Image 1 (tube, helix red, strand yellow):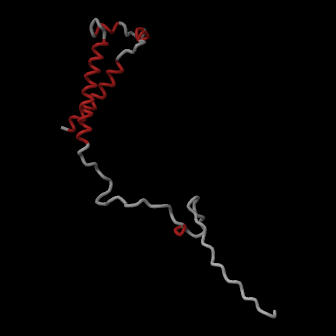
Image 2 (cartoon, rainbow, N blue to C red; image 1 turned 180 degrees about the vertical axis):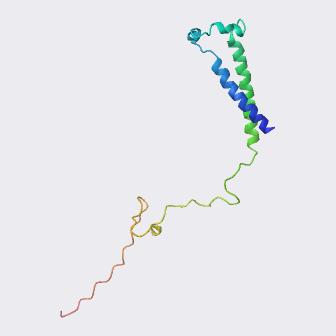
Image 3 (cartoon, rainbow, N blue to C red; image 1 turned 45 degrees about the vertical axis):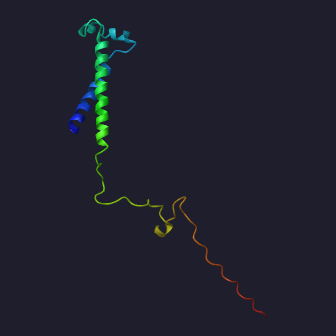
Length: 130
């Protein structure tokens, strides 16, 4: 049933696009140059406007109903996952620490922390008499 509605939805979508493209616009005077004036007798004396507008309305209604049907029933389906049996990581990994860099490689911009300074050593005691 779900696959049938998808097929109907795709067919109605393509039909709706084609029906809209067949309609003449407000400035349809240029269409008479390319033979648009003589083809209006195919649809009757009123021309294709009323027929195509009714066909557009019908296709749009079917398109809306199939869209609502697909949206409603797609919400209950479980979506496939790329991970098999695993769970998502709890926390996102942060930037690489400077300790993980190879020797001689300077740390990247913004993530570098200066190396801790060596503890100050006490000055040597003064020796009297020297």
